[in-house]
Length: 113
Image 1 (cartoon, rainbow, N blue to C red):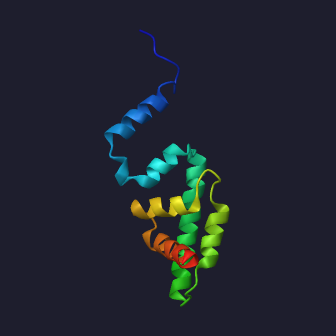
Image 2: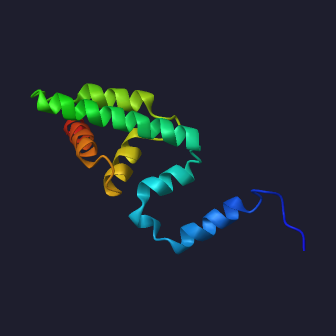
Image 3: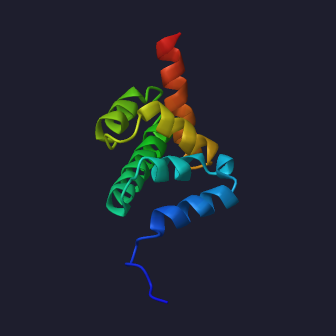
């Protein structure tokens, strides 16, 4: 029996794993997989989110109340494979950067109301 090429079964195996794991608990991870975000793109996104979260916490400690500029920066720097709103919701649901994502979601809701 010969083995197939390296990586040949990866999409199939990934799909099997996604069927086993209840991906409803991991909406951000599912989004990353579905949009075929590379490891480099993922690392860039996590770096962006970490930077924004630090800035948010710092500005909040300084008493700032408007964080729209952080949302604009996030949306502008977000990988084109991802939608800002969908990414915010999935991060929040997966409990990643929750405070920042709550702020972003509040800004978006205020803008549309």
